[in-house]
Amino acid sequence: MVMGRNNDSYPQAFILVGFSDRPRLEMILFAFILVFYALTLVGNTAIIFLSVIDSRLHMPMYFFLGNLSFLDLCFTTSIVPQLLWNLWGPDKSITYHGCAAQLYIYMVLGSTECVLLAVMSYDRYVAVCRPLHYTVVMNPRLCLQLVSVAWCCGFLNSFVMCPQTMQLSRCGHQRVDHFLCEMPALIAMSCEDTMLVEACAFVLGVVLLLVPLSLILLSYGMIAATVLRIKSTAGRRKAFNTCSSHLTVVSLFYGTIIYMYLQPANSYSQDQGKFLTLFYTIVTPSVNPLIYTLRNKDVKGALRKLLGWEKGAGDS
Image (cartoon, rainbow, N blue to C red; front, side, top):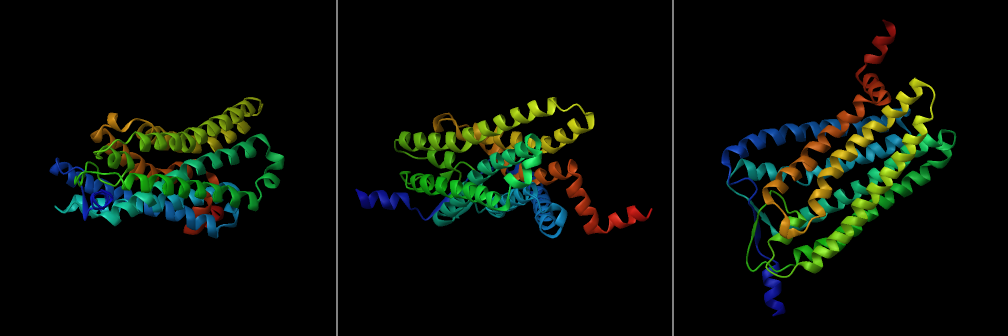
């Protein structure tokens, strides 16, 4: 019985069905994803590069932003090459070990980002509500510790949930009705009782999604109260611009991922799940750099300096 379970749990390969039932859509998605992936690579690499080389960006906010950009780069790279390969040709297969690796990496990075966004909201809270103590509170040691906690949470979640998901019996079924090895899709294709796995996923989802989101909302509630007490219109605008970019990113990321992971597998809509996953794995990482740079004069100044535009503007 154990041998049978093992043989069933470790097939030669999975078939990522993806969008194969819509061949015309596949070519459109190929071009769409390729463009957004290029934007992700350029935008996030630029932010990481600028945060390292420009001394004006050697601050906690940009340290966290650089980490977010690194996460987004790795997050999309763990998915997009395989997805583009599957969209381009008839071969939709992925090896068992390739599927397991994709699931592990994807869950580590996604879970880490959930906690990192909460860390970034705390940084904004200290900057707005305790500006005189900002450099003391957000010292380099604490920043490194907070980022380390985010990464540890990501690895812990992945090491708990991925083995449970991959070892589910699938009775010989190898067709994953998705374009990547995502946990809800892999659980949904199981032929055994998945209640325990789903319960564990739900509990961890609450811890890694709702707890950080609650901390984010608490931080921004306190920030809003502080901003409303600022008498200067310019001061209010500065505080608003500092925080609105982060709130936009939080809304885009959490809005889709909570819907995906905090619902029972039996109510999981495959088509809806695919397009929502496309949004938070492809679109969101590509627009994050744009959202931050549009509202951030320090990043724009560092970019102008790198491109040699700052000097020209000063001479004129």
